[in-house]
Image 1 (tube, rainbow, N blue to C red):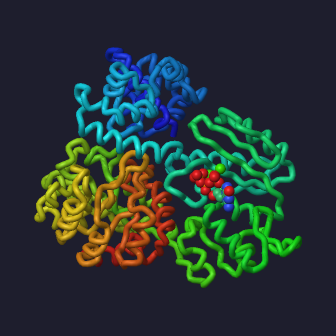
Image 2 (image 1 turned 60 degrees about the horizontal axis):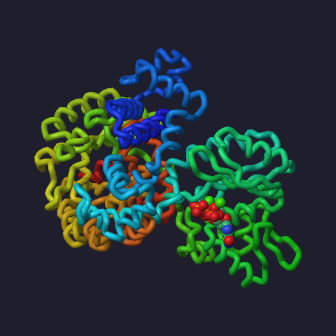
Image 3 (image 1 turned 90 degrees about the vertical axis):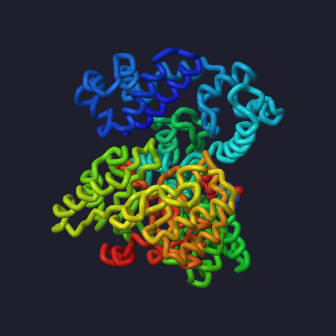
Length: 572
Ligand code: DGT
Ligand code: CA
Ligand code: CA
């Protein structure tokens, strides 16, 4: 789908134009950007079938914007956008990724204080130059300082969900190249880290020259940092780097182990080798000059008297000991999942109908799908009120009649808002009619720790609340989690039998790995949900599974591995 790439560019074009105080045009670009986000079909396909004419049928698309879209489909670039970017004195892409800054504020900062990038912004904040500006103030300045800190930490890292599809594309092309024998995604991407510094490929081939020539001239590669016979490094047009390394067949296992990392895991394994009088490096495991293992990973670990360690665990967080003692967890797998309990439908402004979502779930082989639309407090998401929930119930009951023979059922949940005082925005009498209810915090995120903890626990005490959505509220690269006493949350979850969610949305991945492990150790159950707002997003499960595995979660820890019958019993 190119829709989202183009949409992102259009939003940015609009922002540049807003900065330049161009009239009307920004609105036009924003509008089409949103239309593209909501479009069910891929623009590439639309264009292939019907040309510019069909593209112009997308709401808001006139000739100029239509041509922009075509240009992107044909060349992967939009010249107009590139020019705007070059012309602007301000690094808008950088500044807008600081939470709390939009084009309007950025323009003020540029005009009044000549701020062009985050570095200059930071200097101005520290000199307290921002607070006196009209429309800013002390509080904004404080928040900006925090946001800048966060920006610097996240800088240069990219979300797993953004990078994985692109990396898989490259992977496929490499795999199909006839001079390549074997190729594997290694590094943090193989370990399914939530953010990724760069992509690493490991290749075995007898023809490194041919492979490297092919690699550096692949479409989408913008810059070649370095090209050699064993290692090359490039920048791709999406703005991140790919490293590729070629090793011989006989060292493939040890190279795989080495380049998968993490560094700390590698250091720990090397120490174990040393304690046995052996030497371990990317070329193999050696006793003196003699190579005793390294062709594949399993035998390499075995030679160290270890069980093979799943990549997601390789962070030196106890996996070495567990592997030596044969006590590694039996990690959850994607195939264990029987259904998704947190997704949205067109009822609350999602993109697909309940039926379309359900059909997609059936395609995935699920036995159930829980529709849990937002409730009324969230006006921007068209949250449902009590009456609408009961209408939705009727639709779901009707649809379920159809599915009887298919051993599939739609469940009705709701993603209820936890208000500031811990009360919910939907009456109990309506919650009672649902199959289950999810509660989540979506407002007043900056509360003191004690208050926020009490607020969530109060919601957990409601007998109809079965799941807490995205329990810590972080947004990767944007927003720190809210202040929370997680131990208290764990105790309450256990006492009131509430499930904590592992939200698979690539920007959330909330719970994080540490909290998942705490839940498991404490005996608190979890659910891996996608929070899909459109049917393709049900595929986000992959990221949630990666995160759950990084948190050592097993099948028994995850509630949506249970059958429909077991699950409904649990909810009762
Ligand atoms: P990233 O790219 O920051 O998300 O994280 P990684 O883990 O992919 O790190 P990267 O790309 O720098 O290197 C890939 C792997 O190569 C890394 O996980 C372990 C291995 N490696 C790289 N440099 C060293 C090193 O100096 N010592 C050891 N033991 N291993 C290294
Ligand atoms: Ca890497
Ligand atoms: Ca690398």
